[in-house]
Amino acid sequence: MSHPHDDDGVGTAAQVRRIARQGVYTSPTSVDPAAAHLAEALIATLDGTAEQPVLPSELRSLAEQVRRRATIGFPRITAEDGVRLSAHTIKLNTGEPAPLVIVPAGWTPFGWGLFAYTYLQLALRGYHVLAYTPRGIGLTMAVPGQGYVDGPFTSGGTIDVAGPADVQDGITVLAYAQQHFSPSKIAFLGESYGSGISQLVAANDPEERVAAIVALSTWGDLTASLYQHETRHLAAVAALIGFTGGPPERKFDEDTRQMLADFQAGENMKAVEEWGRRRSPATYADKTNARGIPTFFSNTWHETLFGANQVIEHFESLTVPKRLNLWIGDHAAPEGAGLTIPFSGPNPPVEEAFAWLDHHVRGIDNEVPGWSPVSSQIMFTYETRTDPQTGNRDIVTPADRESRASWQDVTVSTERWYLTGTGPDDRDGGLGTSPESGWERAFTVGQVTEPTAADAVITTGQAEWNGDPRTYAPDKFDRQYLAVFTSDPITADSRGGAARRIRGVPELTLNVRGTDASATLVAYLFDIGPDGTARIITHEPLTLTGLTPGQERAATWKLQAAGYDLADGHRLTLAVTSGDALYSDAATDAGTDGGTTTLGSSDDGAACLVLPLG
Image 1 (cartoon, rainbow, N blue to C red):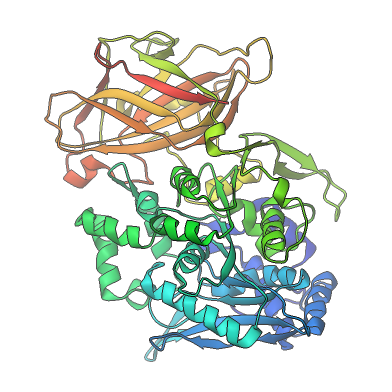
Image 2: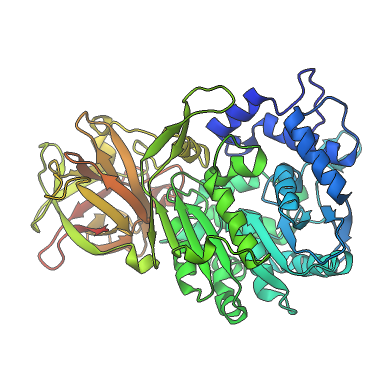
């Protein structure tokens, strides 16, 4: 971050409204400059080095309140191996022990600096705060003829990708916290990268000092997040590599660069899987359970980094006090703005995270004990509210939520939709209520075409969170490169309301025959309205290996979980293709673009979509 010198200052009402409406991210690897400048200006105000006036009066007042109540620090914490971690501390001036929240930064060039507003909120709620940047993360600038210079929020060392060094660093930070704060209790709050590190440190701290965890936009199984159903999530890893703040040769050591190269090339994948398992909180769930650490998860249905299914499975494996919020959108969209800027109105993703800490760390008697363990926001319902700054009724936020006692209670029943040879449109197959065998649908492989799950990692889902879900035009899908199956219009039952309340994890079964020894299939489930416009419900890729060309194989795989209301009179459409820009493609990997994949159904196993209903 560079210090802003705009005459108009930073964090203006217009800038804050823009970030609240559009989100923090302007691309998968860039943050809105206004959000970064606002964070830096808050830090400068806390440090007493700000050029006045920099911040609007409301934010200056917030920072000054914290300065009056606390001692501000910017230490470097020395790790066990000598690496120095950039950190920020807010130590409340109180004679009584107070709880402490440790915040490992997310995977951004801005390190701990981006969430300066969050630290102020936590301090005013009665917490000491210790934020730090995990090793290797942060802006590193090349200086011609002089090598590299690190930014102020950048930590030394190289990125360990939530590995053993990051866990040991977290344990070192815990020891530093005990020495310098003498806190009554310690909690971890993290978003994205920081959330995974939070879980791993809490599970592995030999002194069991962590009293609660808040994990926002998190993962349970890193291997399943980046490599599931034999398919590599290439766009997610590319975005991560591009958002460290410096060149890979500076940010990663030789072993990690080789691991990332193997992943990208699809080589030595067993070693890559084991590497991911060591970095997965799910691997240590027994330790979390034994310690009884209250754990709060917040994720999204359309995650392009850490898919919903793997975190749901991790959540289900925990026997501790727990909460799982599932929201409309993609990675970091629900909580990003609320952690970064003053929000004009309620921001439940952040407010509920703070409430979790208040109850389990401060002992506040609030609404948390009455919460159901699972809360699902339903796609796509929104509400419009008034912006108190302008008086305009133009703030759009997702609306309907449902509470359940467990994830198992989300799905009440299932129904089968059978893939058929002919649908309502003669050029496509159908989705019907009776099994049908003997049909085939073939398409050419190796070509990324519409549909795709997202235009871009993070930002497509960020727009979805902000009231603008992506739409599709199925009539324009190129049938040379995919197979399409569509139902008749579906009507609501006698109770009215939605035609189908999709709740849970859909599952797809079909027969596959290819011209090559491997095949990638990407299945997309759509809601199509009467005007022919579609919205995506869910999707998931699958790669089959060891195929015998010309011979059929039955394939069954789970799509990502969904909470979706299909409106009365709408249709379901299933599209299956061979590639998506998010993922690896077996044909491209093998250099066999132009082959053919044929889908079908047999008497032994009818092709069908199992739809979970709530």
